[in-house]
Length: 405
Ligand SMILES: Cc1cc2nc3c(=O)[nH]c(=O)nc-3n(C[C@H](O)[C@H](O)[C@H](O)COP(=O)(O)OP(=O)(O)OC[C@H]3O[C@@H](n4cnc5c(N)ncnc54)[C@H](O)[C@@H]3O)c2cc1C
Image (cartoon, helix red, strand yellow):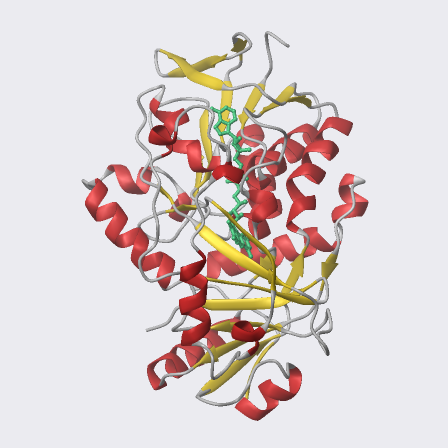
């Protein structure tokens, strides 16, 4: 155990581990990466590992393009393995109103330099024969999209950070962020205090709990997300484009000879991590396969294989949703040295390389490398919010992740 660091990062999921890596890379800082569980063991390794470049706004597209470059150079950069496949993806509209949204995506994608084109339903079926053209009104091919092994990202960044001098402290529960006269002074942990003038709250589903130990309220909701991996399927190639069906909010991608698929359900399951108790581990999260059975029924005309394929693995995790669908990244208003890397909106792993580096620059240089005010916690402090409003808006953002009208 150490007693002092320059920066303490709380939480070693994709976001915290990436921040720790880029902080350690800057050199000259003692960076401690703490986790109450094992390193990188909670929601991050349970993700789908899909990288979606078609986002609703320019900022997210800029960041995800940067993340794509960093995924390509991950092993050269960190010295750690990362298996990734540049498969591209197909975004599917089944309703005219969603076809209009796709048209907007096409224009934004072109303006932002993405490899996007509208293709016919038959062409979409030719590119990925598991996707049937029946009921497809419009399809967008997004050439930049890719997927990776989610289990390698957080652990890879953490090990890379360690190689650059960061200290990894697993099984170390942060019980309080200490603040004196508006300045962070350190953390209290289950293994003793650590003095530090900068603390990054990257505690994923526990972000609120960590912040509330020092009286800061963070409007995000821990939200269940589940997926299935099927047994291997005849004709399933690793480079088949991923599929996203907009109004059903169903996604599928190749995985170990089978399909990995999931859904952003209509009525999401929210958690209060406080009530789950101090020993809760993500692997104990209650799962509900009915949600996926209903989703498979919803898309049976386009992805009939989802009803037929045998389930090899069924898993889930607890990402966090915000009311406006943007992450929460950057400093806490009015507390010097308190930073956030959270509010992942079920897309935090893919963007973690870009957010991690941007946050490290913000902490070390005093400014982010690009305007991240849309992600600042301060955006919520001007207007009143209640738990009911937060859950209502977060549920809408969740179900409409693919921009369905
Ligand atoms: C089924 C599923 C599919 C998904 N698909 C995708 C996808 O395709 N693409 C994508 O980009 N994202 C996807 N996601 C979302 C992605 O998993 C998250 O955005 C990302 O993993 C969030 O990382 P994190 O670092 O915020 O959280 P976590 O990985 O949960 O890490 C937080 C860490 O903080 C630690 N911690 C908490 N409290 C404390 C404390 N008091 N003291 C010390 N440590 C603490 C925890 O133990 C944990 O290890 C998916 C998620 C799920 C569940």
